[in-house]
Image (cartoon, rainbow, N blue to C red; front, side, top):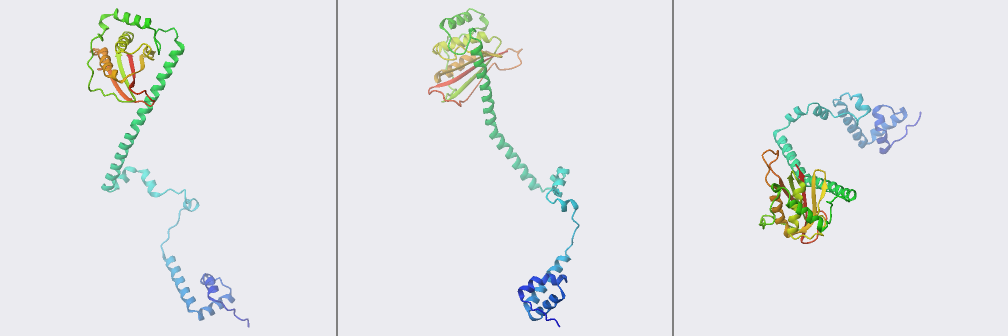
Length: 296
């Protein structure tokens, strides 16, 4: 008769699942049963393992869809699919507190984003307009050498002729700028600022001559760069650096030059202005002044 091999606890633990499934050979099955008869620890381990397997087999099971078994990561989540199918219904099913919280956070986020993006959008717009104006000014300097009005310095005779022609022209468009101008106390001029003045007129050339006269009377030298102005599509632009003390008086003068719009015009204002910080350095005690004469 063949002798039954002996089995220790370690080997019995390794063969325990095979013994439960009934796939041990007759020789190893007899050795396993003999070891269980001698080892109480192995018997307890086998009892716990059988109870665990019986609990797992008693759990309810559902058939897994074929798509989920083949591609588990690409299978759509039911809740998301239901939400995208009818988001309004899902939104109405949420508690009122949750909806109020989501709406409040959304409104606050929109306000914060608007506050953050507002200055950025304005800066981009001003930078783009500045580049366009500089491009037009450069093209004007290169292509119109014989044009009497060019950006930069004008001769004394040229400026005096233009101002004289303006004074001898139509009286209804002339504005008296020789009188003293009361400085507007509400105007506060700071460092590194760009002052932009927009005037709407049907005669930009005549108003330009009046501006030349006002700049000369304000004490600006004839050698000031940009005092002659530049022609651009739709009007005339002055771009020059002036002392900060002249900004308030020049603002009042330009406002008088603009006058009041007639009732037939579609707009209600002929003079607007605003200021902003310059991205480029400006000499101390001076400000950049940009005057735009818009053709009506």
